[in-house]
Image (cartoon, rainbow, N blue to C red; front, side, top):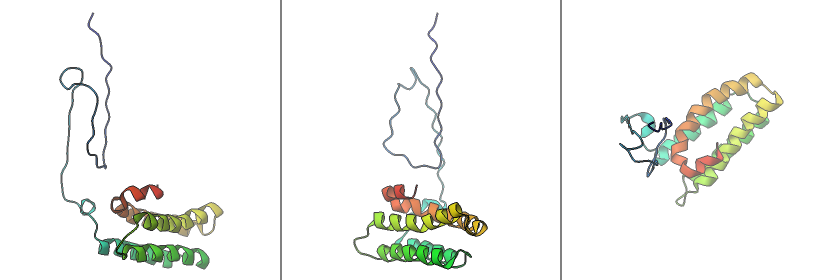
Length: 147
């Protein structure tokens, strides 16, 4: 009676992987199929320093026009300005940038948790999230502070 081997399948999308090894011997105990889509999209181009500053400016504008309480808005903008200033430094500290972005985002979470202008906070998060997603590849390992 032939030995039946369990079937395994996994899919990874929207990620960058390098130096990945999967156990097994292709053609003997496993079949390997690799599908790769290569294309130039806006998000696949590495961000420049100017791009990052522009994205942070967009975040500042979103907070300024959000309708959140003035104290929350000022606090978030203070953190965004600190992040923007750090991007201009010669010896850039991406961890510092990520931590300040995290603090600005935390303002939204606090607003949502306390129920203060929930609608404004939810609407703002929908606008902030795509910008943060664009910044994640630039931040690299430092992005773990935002997750």
